[in-house]
Image (cartoon, rainbow, N blue to C red; front, top):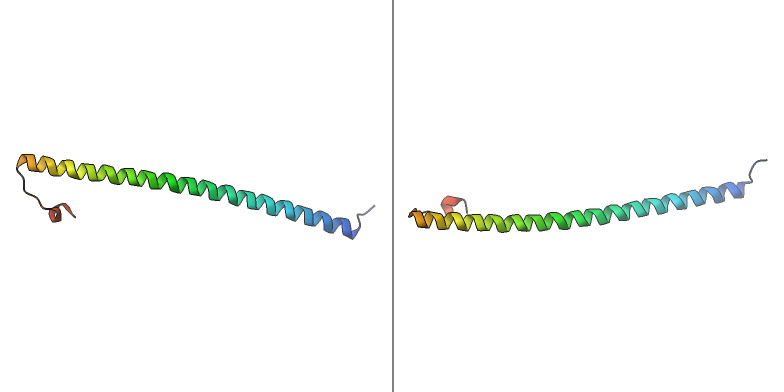
Length: 77
């Protein structure tokens, strides 16, 4: 016995609805993961910037202790 047209259409609609829901869930998880990764990278970049600033200050302090004159332009600023 073959299914009637209404049953086939209902089944197709249900499958499409399930597929759409699954795709939406996947996109939502991807967006959440991307946001978390973005936050993590931003934090690490900020930390690296702080480390670079500390390093530049220490190099400048060492140069001052050594009696070396050097302007910021010569250091690349």
